[in-house]
Length: 265
Image (cartoon, rainbow, N blue to C red):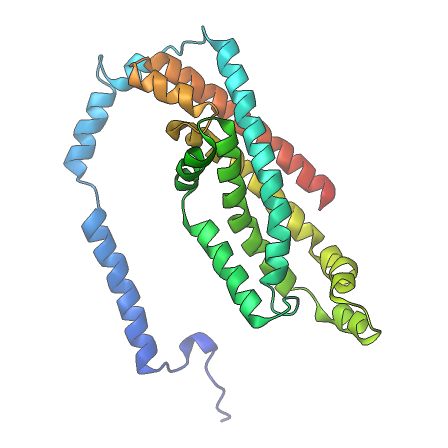
């Protein structure tokens, strides 16, 4: 009988691969063992939440007496997200081009661009907000700059990957007739990457709206300031109202983003 090779998943693996798999499993098991919550503590905590004087009972019914000021702060939060995301997406494009193998002018430039994108993506946006508060002071300007840096890291990576995955045929054809790097990017790379760029940009906007609310916790503007004050003053019913209004804003942005994505892609 003719011997057929086994499917790839059943092929013999090297000892080093088995060791790597065992180490990965050991990491997963040890992570659960080291960080798993105590079930008894969870049960007691849930009981305290639903107690007559617990947090959830103090939150209901939500207090919408400050609906107007909260709505203005939500508008500021949305403006921070839109401005920061727009700036971040604009600056992410050149970083992504420099980080792409076939488009970067030099390997050292590519390595440096990838390192900067990784740095922007690794440092949490709250840390960037604190840094920019020191630079420009309290207020939404610091939040916009923090969102911008975060989005350069977020979008820069996906933009670079999209440009790496494009068909190289049109690029080689343009290069063969003497087209420069800029002409290749504008005429071959960008048109092929437009659907991916659009989806990434819309996801970045959604992420910015959700993240901009947290930036106010450190004084970078937006609704986070009011939410922190409400919790600090034990105004839990007002805090719930803020959370519900923020939820409505996030859902509205996600629905609008989905509609735009369906129309453009």
